[in-house]
Image (tube, rainbow, N blue to C red):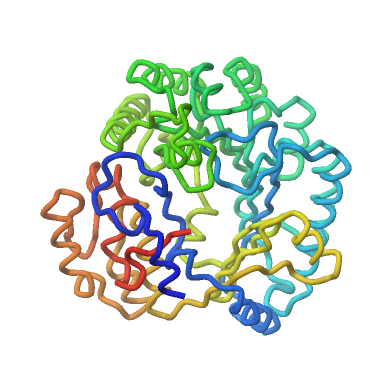
Length: 449
């Protein structure tokens, strides 16, 4: 198994200082790497779900809606652009049934949901009829009236007034708009389905409905970006007046349209900005948003001062909450076990139709790996406390990782003082590249995904 994983290394587990944007660069969303998950471990998931336990551990639900108007050229998620209304109805029925199957297990039965996340794909793509029918069934199995957060991802061009009202009506507290950029030519080049007119059309309606939190996503370094266009995007985003912002730096996971054209050396292969440029653009955005009344909340997020904002889903995952991931190719973390669903349409629907959970692969980390996972992910917040890890895991991180912290301190990436580790601005801007320092040797040089 290890030899297979090491055969195709990628930037996420090999390069301490990324230069060019190479194929294989990814946002670090978990530890240990996904490539170590196996189909031979899924029996452990079934055994774990059959046992009651950890009723005090927060539990959330992720619902994967894998439909889009178009596939973005940088997208690496499991999405479909060719499904008709009947097929969407079939999928939503299966998704609801999967939630019902989980609700019957000893591990989850009767436990309240702390958070719910509609992700994709494009959750706002499906019709009001499909959305309401799905939610009615899911809430019967797992009510979320007491959840601290219900988050919902949207593509601006799919939002009509009735759909926004339906989304508000199901209890969504955080509406996240995939704006990405405010220049039409760049949106078209990167395969986005929407244009800026659709953003301007929908934002007043969003604000009028009074969602608790409106978030806007941006990507630094989309193909075709320049300093001038990025500055325009940042200013126009400020004008939209979101409660919070999420800024990602353009990556090139293996299974994207752009990555394929680069690996096959096609004439149409894109020129992707290098990391130094993307970090400079990201840094400019942070400073400009701060001048407009926002403050840094993590390596990727800024929030408007004096407005109530939260990212319950993110914080819960990074503190090892249970999360049931439903839908094709979705990822879960329950009872200390990581697992993923079947990754293809027919296989996923087939398992559900036969009344079984569509499990594909799994991984059960050691206690040491659980501890390392939390520390690695929480570093993305920009600050961690040694006392948290000492109390929860009995590990002194300042002693365990003294050489790594010392080196990163010398490089100006972080500081350690009074039991607190704080990333500098430069550390925040390249946090995904710093995390490799805390990987066990056997996971360094491996395939991440």
